[in-house]
Image 1 (tube, rainbow, N blue to C red):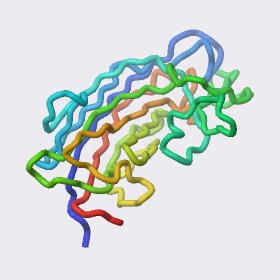
Image 2: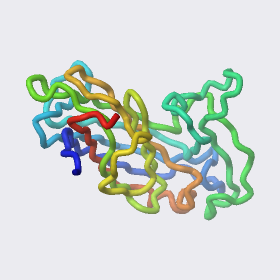
Image 3: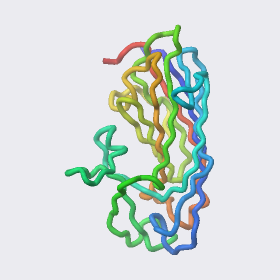
Length: 237
């Protein structure tokens, strides 16, 4: 029997991208950048179980919004193995290779022409934009929800937009739309959601390894992302 949803929450991410500069380089050019302006995350709940706030100490209600403006260079990352890897860009740590990196292409119309070697970041400022909101189970309703996941997500095709959604216990990375995502232990953002608010963090970046992310196509890199969070009344474990 399919488990009833406990916490549905719809989140909208608006992404606008404009390439600046006149360099002949394509993605990962030092003299061009993708400008992601007016990015907005709106979280909406249509159930009594979930309350959402734009700030931890803010007013909790059925909806909240975050705005974000950032100038972003395209970027990519090595394979991650743990939640901490998302923000693990400290190259002083021995054996740490799960880092963000950039490369250069010498053709404005091709995303991977004569690529340079990887150059790892020591800070992803200017490459990865972040925003957060806080979720909790409404006091007086069910005390605990379990296994918070992303159940649906819509991402514009051929835009190079990648979204990472992370909670207290895990993350999920998306570069394409998906619907009716079934529960999987590997995809759980948070093991539990209680009446104590917790942060859900959203990371946005333009994937330089995407075939559509190059200088001549920069004006097309725009679109809207929506995703839905779901938790369950009982623990899968």
